[in-house]
Amino acid sequence: MKKIMFISTKIEDVKKIEFIANGYNIAKEAIGVINRDEAKVSAYRLQSASYWQRLDIFHSGEWGALIGFIIGLIISIMIGVYQPLDLQLGVLPLSGFVALTTLYGTWVGGMVGINHQNHKIAKFRHEIKKGKTLCLVDVVDDLEDGLKNAVLSNCANTRLAGIDTIGEGILNKF
Image 1 (cartoon, rainbow, N blue to C red):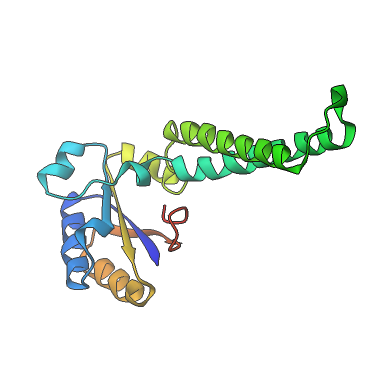
Image 2: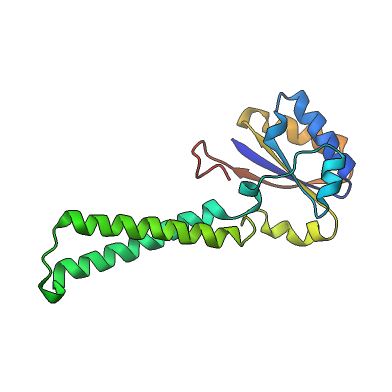
């Protein structure tokens, strides 16, 4: 799957994108729109991008999990090797400690991500603040070229902002 990102100076063109995507049997839920004026998005009956698409929860959570795992692993190895206070812990308690630090890191990372814009759309922040509209369309690989060409030929005020590969798993979806 791919996420095609279009930037448009007119929200009417985004409505055209939705119509063109519908012709390719792309569901309305696969299209997310980001504009500084959410009332305008609603007035045109466009689907606003979800919080999962807008915020960096998954990306920051993954980094938090990785950092938590590494910290837990280092501390567990140090406890296992140096045995402070004559603690003789087996593999199971140390593995549990690594799991807990990984989960804690995931939670902290997710909380950090709630306060940050999605890293994939952050580069469009200034254009969105200027009144442009970002349209995110999730498509299967076979439809990518056709949709891209149809949108660019029918929407004069729209340019291709980027194409991103998204995975099938939940963590790669955003």
